[in-house]
Length: 382
Image: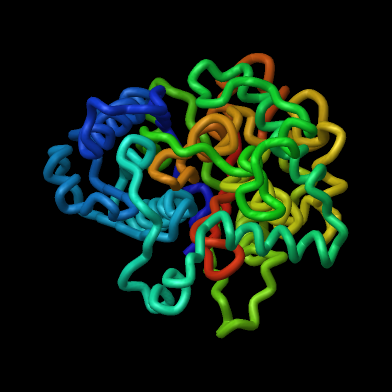
């Protein structure tokens, strides 16, 4: 069964606040859901499919939101979950099991910080007890990439510089100030070679997407975006035989592009999950925007800046400067891609004649085990 052409993204919403101390997580799910449905011109009564990462139990949220659904999905693969949800919604719509799919993400990690610990996972007793951290594991990947390919800390810093250039035009960005390569390198070292400004922000809030069938889209007074291709894949530790210089994008990128019938040269805009600067660099290589090991050269000289470089990336400021809700920013990467395709990004960073966008989400830790998901979205010509 071909999925292409069976789904449209009709509504998106990003919560405008980054520090929220007067809401519960459930209230945030409601607010982002209401925002995305209003953007699409739909109501809660129209929703017949609900998708979430399951951190807040889906059955509880369905009850709380007052939904009458016939399709439920609680897939959880970290920050790539919401891109997986779009693909799963596309499959469900193609199979006829739902027509209006609501995808929500919400959390309060900035206001309710807790220590990192993954009790109950198979690896926790062997890894977490020795002080393993997310930043530390990503630093391992960065160190290996530097050793193997000659990548430099200054090249990684260029990714933060591009994000900050875009963030200055986003009034809701947590870190709206432009920075230089020197400022990134002078910021405190978190885990060698990653500095504080190589790391994403921690924010409260969330976002939501509404994916609908072509028939529903045709009846909306709203420009929609076509879902042309999607793929997801895990990359695990292989019992210790892991290469931390590549990500699951090596599999998901080619598959999603093939389903969409396009290649990287056709892409006008890319939303790339940026938990750390090394995440972006390796992902760009694995997606095929440049050769493996050439990512450091690719990101230099403003190459990721809208209106300047060859591939505009994360024009809202990304997770490095704008927003990383629930410590899982894939939904916001998708929101900004939809804005670009609808011509609704901030005017100084809007990509001219944006027709095709690639979105990639990363979950877990690229230095150990992770998941990835890629979306190819296109301006709806219908």
